[in-house]
Image (cartoon, rainbow, N blue to C red):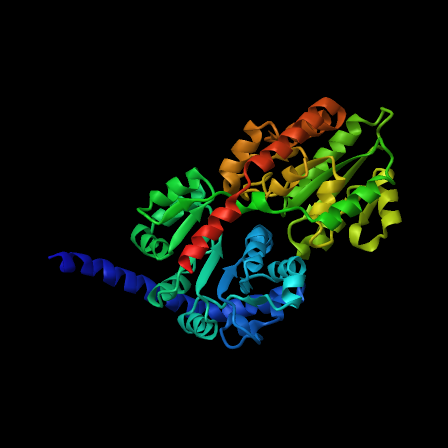
Length: 447
């Protein structure tokens, strides 16, 4: 009776996987065409296509025991303390990505580990059964660590069939995603329960996973609190600060997304207009650092049509850079991997991804450098962290352009408020460290 009762569910799962694979076969030509199309602006999309198809990998020497998958830039940066700790413990790492910017970020962050042969990079193959099986056959990995939200059914179920422990690390599940996943409750439960462990960032994330009927969830905290800002970039920023007029204050709009720059430009114009007849009218500088490098040119054109003094970080030496800041210019941050530098130079940070319904971007590194944060309404990807940072009085929540102007005016003209929020930001970042040690313990148990 029990066996018969469960048979329909097994058939349902098989049908779902069959349909999923069929869709992948249909979509594969489109996926390859998309790579070639995006490769017009970013060559990296046309490189290493063989890896995405599970055909070959340029790996030589000892095969890594531990595999870490970090889809793009944010996940790669978040994985840094975990990867460093594993390598310090004698492990060799396979680091996979889905985007060229993620791969480039990994190449920059782990240059020494790559040079020493302790870390190798690859693209993750598309989630087609033959590509996934080829991946697992080639790499004799002992445990897989998937960062944050990347859940690929073929990848996870194949690992389960091979008794390969795979752990979802730094896991988060927004309310919106939980509702979407719940539409396929039985199939989603099968996939998520196939993870050896799901290591959630917060109790709220864990609660949402539990609502799917999962029993393999553990709260270990957010790895992003353990990320150490780049010391060389901070040193560089501090050296440049000595060349700046002491009255100059810098606003950094970080990791902005399509549509947000227009809002920030309008707010900045209104802010400057309010200071037009004051003595400090030229003592403010704006950095805009888009999230995606393929948008740099478009954003620069947008800035040129809105301001007289506009420059690109990538085209200036240090002297030219500080001159633009001292003269109240607007600077496009079009250099990759320099967020620590921009944060260290800035006085306050407007967090991109939060001004439009995009879920927000990571503000923790800015807090670790003591920068007051301005957040928009839309932070569902960082729901608990954003609530906590506001409760800690390290961030201000704004709802529209007028709110943004008021928040900038408050922080740039009231030194006491700004310094208080700066102290609170440092405290907030320091109070939430420790996820790396907890995750390492789970990995060691799996090994």
